[in-house]
Length: 177
Image (cartoon, rainbow, N blue to C red; front, side, top):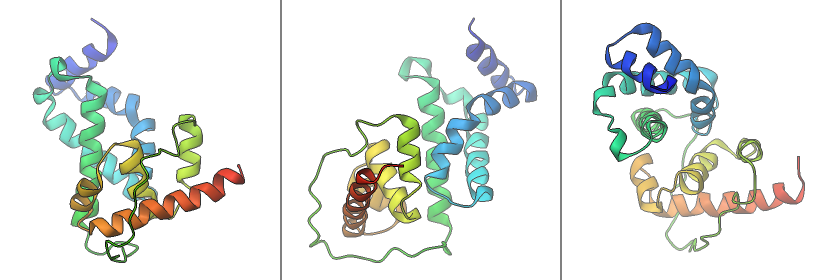
């Protein structure tokens, strides 16, 4: 039995030591994920903790036949972060509702030629709201409609942020780190 399966078996038995090992093993990647949604470290860690609590509570629902554990856990933590955003009525920024006349049409992914470290550095240079939407669209594959529903904003606003992210990233890419 490989080490991850041993840890998962311990988590199913509700062993704290196994839960701690799982948490520590995936903390760096989950931190990077949640940093796309929040700027404050406390909020990032809260989102990770909320997500991991859901992972531990629902570990018996994970089915290896349906996919990799990492993908299941990543999705669970990402959804916990989105829930935290949606439930938070007093966010540190406001989305300005935009008319659907923007006409965002590009399917080109500006990140496809970059390494994971470079992507993270470039994303951190975007404003928080734009970074969230850009990450959900390009990195996680959400549609405009899914992002609008998840963040409770209009599709036009999502399209504006995607257009804004492309414009800002173009300038960033022309002036590398």
